[in-house]
Amino acid sequence: METKPIWDKGKPVNGLIQQYTVGRDREMDMFLARYDVQGSLAHITMLQSIGLLEKDELAALSSGLKDILDIIEDGRFVIEDGVEDVHSQIELMLTRQLGDMGKKIHSGRSRNDQVLVDLKLFTRDRLRAIAGSVKGLFDVLVRQSEKYKDVLLPGYTHLQIAMPSSFGLWLGAYAESLADDMLFIKAAFDQANRNPLGSAAGYGSSFPLNRQMTTDLLGFESMNYNVVYAQMTRGKLERNAAYALASVAATVSRLAFDACLYNSQNFSFIKLPDDCTTGSSIMPHKKNPDVFELTRARCNRLQALPQEITLMTNNLPSGYFRDMQLVKEVFLPAFDQLEEILTMTAYMMEHMTVRENILDDARYDAIFSVEEVNRLALQGVPFREAYRKVGAEIENGTFKADHNIHHTHEGSIGNLCNDRIVARMDALMAQFPFMDIDCAIGKLTSK
Image (cartoon, rainbow, N blue to C red; front, side, top):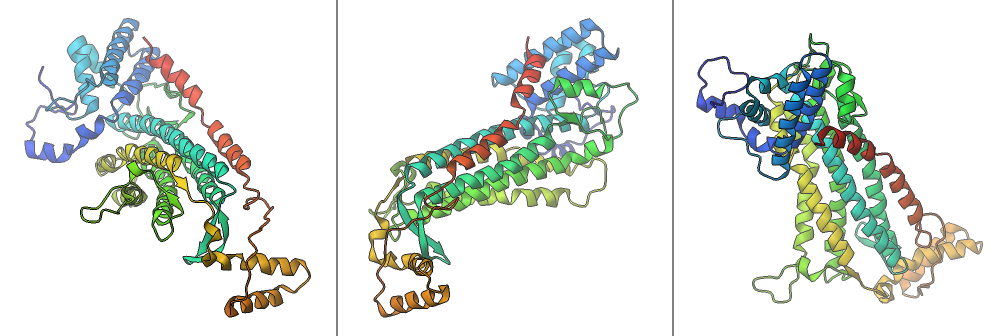
């Protein structure tokens, strides 16, 4: 069967122009294939309910779409040469199997709302996976924080030794940062979990579509009610999801920098797994933290993603514009990139080792100065007088560090509050309606 664009009007198409306008769309659409089938299954179920399909047509089309879903899940799905996008490919496969009946799946929708619902379903699914990977790294950090909570290390300000810290405090800080990042993931998930299907090209349809039905069938929490706004979420959806990815990436990038610093010989606070370091071509002693250096760079690249999407979509008026197509090229692969980063970071933090008794080195004695100032203040010495006294002792070399420290307030060395941080993360994770979505999609796609 000859393949033509679904918008074909019987006129010849300039091949160079078609290649330029299609770009990498076929490649990017492979990310969306399963979601295009899910959206089509919901759409045809709704079409039958309003009399645009007969029951036997719904049965045949549903069976055909589920067969295509099996092909996708098995990794055998391809977008053929000459076929413009995933929507055209699926409709072509149905038409080959069912004849003109296959063409009926496009009634009452446009590629605009079709790709929007695909993107919403994709983003919802991939944010769920990111949330799981973030929770996995979070769990590693909390376990390591508890394991090494009594092992002290120097805290720094301005890269100068400042006050006593601990591995428990350091690792727990990044765990709590990930809990805050989960707020961004949940916000982006909530935006993705709204149904645009039925907005068509952005102005609705004269068909009596039942948008609540497709919303329920696809497990969306609600719909994008205003059809113009539904189309306006294109670009906004991707940008806000990118901010969530960037927030996680910022946390991991900072952790990677710390780990590289602490792993160096001048610090030697931690030892990264040998299989995560590389050697030098001429220096036999080298064990370079290449994995974390690459992690840092990849995270920084992800932090540029929201700005990149903004620059592609900024200052567009309402309605659809082809500019949006290019967003897919940077947005869709970003989830795999962050998942790989999170998996690798969790592995490295799980298998690192820490050096104990770091603060026994006399070079760190000065970090106990604040402890001595506070001790004197508790004895009634005015704080500024105690500060001057201890400062003078440090200057003249008579300061004697007391390594016995006792911090008790919430979030300090002696009271990490990891249990409260874990409870906060668990509460955030419990807000995701994963079971409801699984139930809806499972029912929609089951044979």
